[in-house]
Amino acid sequence: MQHTGKAILPHFGAYVPQNIDKSLCVSYSALRESQGRSTGTIWTELGHLQSAINFAVKCRVIDRPCKIWRPAKPEADKRILNKGEAAALIDGARDPHIRLALIILLSSAARVGAVLDLTWDRVDFDRNCINYRLRDAQTRKGRAVVPMGAGLRAALSVAHDAALSDYVIEYAGGPVKSIRTGVAAAIERSGIGKVRIHDLRHTAAVTMLSEGIPIEMVGQMLGHSNLAVTYRVYGRYMPQHMQSAADVLDFTKVRKV
Figure 1 (cartoon, one colour):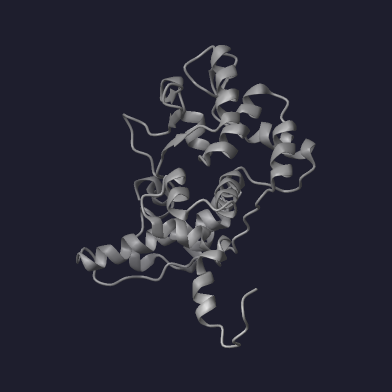
Figure 2 (cartoon, rainbow, N blue to C red):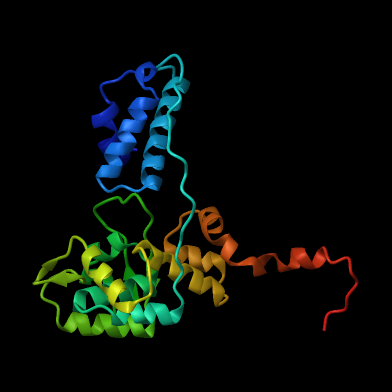
């Protein structure tokens, strides 16, 4: 809520709840859109404002709630890459730090922020794992300790030998704040069509599920503290876990071959 407040308060902070109307919410939506924020982000931010107002009513800080207008919730548009597309994307990266970032994103299911924050002291070659957790800070999203596959370990080993800084993803000897431009260029060169950076995390998760990895293990790789989140987001990609339920509903008496 503190994170959302940085965006919400400059626009709504001077108003009492009963003076917040649809036009004010619409103008906020237009402002955030002009700043490059997605409809989904705006929908979430305004939802947090509604939650804060409802909580204030519950705590009797204000007398009655107000209705916060929100844009229509966008449809989920996850793009899941197949292994050929993922390989083409990696091959489309010209800069070594972009190529390494893509390998890490696809091979560990991490969020881009966690990858850019990653320092070499949290890459443990002896234990063969990566620790995405930060010791001295709290993040809004869960982060995990994950093992390294052979390809990821090899890529990290080469990068470690050539490292000029403490950061795994570096450029000119310093940390990298954003890889969006480099990734966009790699996507264009790969010819795989429209892909968002966060789709790489979805690709990793769905690939694990499609290969029969238990959803509990996938949730741990993703850093989900609650398995219900993993089921809600990715349960539809693993219909096989409902096969026993479907078998019970077979009234045709057809013998299994």
